Image 1 (cartoon, rainbow, N blue to C red):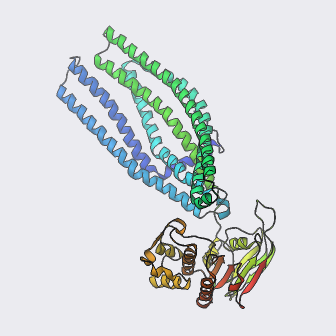
Image 2 (tube, rainbow, N blue to C red):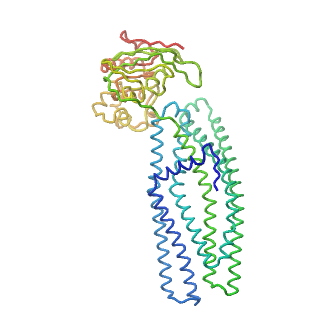
Image 3 (cartoon, one colour):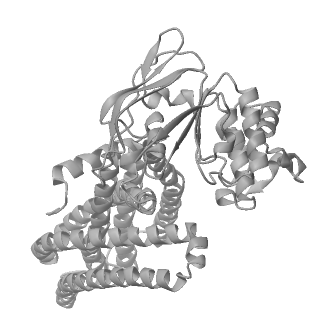
Length: 551
């Protein structure tokens, strides 16, 4: 009945959804039980109303007070079921969504940096928010609702069939039309929904990037251009939504016409039977309610189809995230606290540029040495840092960490613990200065943080009204570039790693502060291996080794 046209085989997509379902069995079981109980109560309510009317019209015997008490009990039970359903949705629903979001967030943080970077961060956020919500709601709420709908449909049909077989068969005559239309509907809606979701991701990406670089947009005076670009993408989104809505409305109207025809037929059939005296008023009312109970599930199906379309599309997009390769951690070799690093005939070229950034590159950074990396733009300075941090891997050759005792380890994600990295620019997170420092070492003491701030020439923090409790906004808003950079260096100095990697980390500092900072590092962290990229020759001492890269 479901014709799923996608980049993944239907069997693989359904298997993936089944695995998600297994993780949230408790909520699914509870929702199924609550939904089934609600259906049973609805049928009991129909029987009770029929009984009360037949008693009131003297068509059957019984106490009206007893029937009324039963009806009140059913209504109270329905209220209880409704309350429990909302509670399960509020508590377990949020828990399920948080769990799935946390799982993908954790996976992203442990995925290969270069492969993850192929996707825009706005698109990834859209998947972590919208797609996770769609999948979780479908699995934990829509599937139990379908089970309840199936029970309602079967029970209503059998109930009505026991009263009037002909009317029951006439009522479900719309089923073949529903099945035929659902195949065409599903295929078309899949394609339209995929286009809408991808366009929605583009909008979020543009919004996020523009807000993040608002200063650049304003200084380039391109506010109107960015607004026009957003308007263009939104216009394409409106067109796709308009097309999907038109298609959905026409399909729903055709099915609605079929349902109305069946309902009218049932009503007239009951009216004729009532006129002939072959049924009671209670049975007539039961007829009308049961026809609604049969046709209601089919109307629900038309509502469920778009939900499943969204879930299938969201599932595909989350499965694509699962295909981002994970980082490789090899071995657990214990080295001295300050190892050296050796490049052996390393070559690397980015896919977007066939030119080798590094080719047959060989160089040794001995333990405890201080090395300055200099060179023109595009000569491979940042690429070399990324290779050291295993954010990218050499295409040929190898990078080896070694200590003075001859122990060695191939550079990979597991050896990143030996490094302390400070990139160029502002890398602070929103929060307090203390929060940022503790990212370097969550177990750092007050004295550790004060020492790191002093060594990083960030002692201005102690003169702030709230000192380390002072808050900074996104990307260090509220601090100057130089202040933010010094706090980032202090954060790095708290990290246990003893290979210091500085990529133009002092570019925002004035010469005097920069000179004082390097003196502190060379004096207090002399045992550490120091590798730094710089354009400023004034910080290079006679003891500093120089690696000059050429384009």
